[in-house]
Image (cartoon, each protein chain N blue to C red):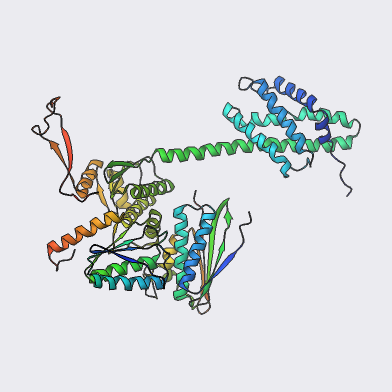
Length: 313
Length: 137
Length: 129
């Protein structure tokens, strides 16, 4: 096979950069390619000019494949453009059209350059089509990638937002779980809890599952493993807020909660926690709460005081 | 990435097991394993390495690979010995089964710490166990 | 020879395990602890494993043995400072360290040892909890 004749795309990009930009802008502004309400003309012009400049640079190598490092900058530009357009509300199709709309001006110049050389023209039309198609498809890919990144970030945010570990009392942590627990989320949450136990030196952790609609075998097992791990570290867990249906499921699933302290409500769990850490909770009697602003009837002051224990840190 | 180079280490003494743990830990850190994932693969490796010393004829090799699957990277360890082999693999994987003086958590426990666990053994010829743990999300 | 140091603090022994354990080191430690309990008449043993980045069934077994041996010699054992990742892995491995008491840190471990020895003394030497 004889060597393919050299493509003249690079040469044309070099020669007619200014004209191509003018034609391309006209093409986009008259066509339906750019929703002008979303983007200023000057911004579009900057993007087009930059695209042309980088395309000219990159096409000095080969225009038939885009694997070389000379294409990196152009790809980065497309990634940036796609990102900013996605934020501006462009659809993936509209962004891809930005690239595809360059075909017409480029084809016109090619036709001019080749004149009657049909073979040369069809070769370079093919090259140009392939090149711009690939670049256009790339924007779609970036679009999708951008969406995936957003989803991953939101998932992570959601996971952190929805699982706060609260230090409700000196030495007592509470983890109110809300929403559906999948195996992965439960694992992250539980690791967080164990880390907080170490950080705060809390010997008791209350896991409240009032807000959890469904507990399946895997989630129940993760709960049990967390309780076991906490015990190995020297802390006790209490599980509270087990609703009747969940109690039934747990038994049906054959999950053994026999070694775990369970309480119906968070407040029951808290009073156990107080007992274990040596606090007693009592109502402040009238005689004790002599305060200057006076006590009204029915106002209850809860006083937590430590019984006996003086060795606490 | 030139990661799929197999490395190996001979296991002859409990000092070798310690060395292997540090080696596996370093590779796990290197490919960005979370602390829990690191600990799990290192512990599994420790159990299997020790298993070779106690039941695998006292000598063997461990090979380390960093395979990728569905754009996830992982650590794969292969333990080989030319010991007496395991006659009943099912039984050996059960918790509490032991022929040594230990708790008998070795094989079954190691299996729970990894994502993939393969075992091939022929009585009189030896045992090969391959474990893989993939990097978590 | 390499060994793990055992500190005497009041009536207790404090062992901080910082190195990756191999068999010989573990055996030496068991011998040293039992010797020291008898020699110092210690009533409590605290093993700090906060520096350990993994515990396999071998080390777990060693901790269990030290606890059992100490109990025979009338000393309480508490293991303190296990890291979350280590604890999660141990649970998955299937090891629950039954018979070994645990505490979050050295201070809490000390509290636990004191109160359990007090309780033991109040109940008389023949009652075991």
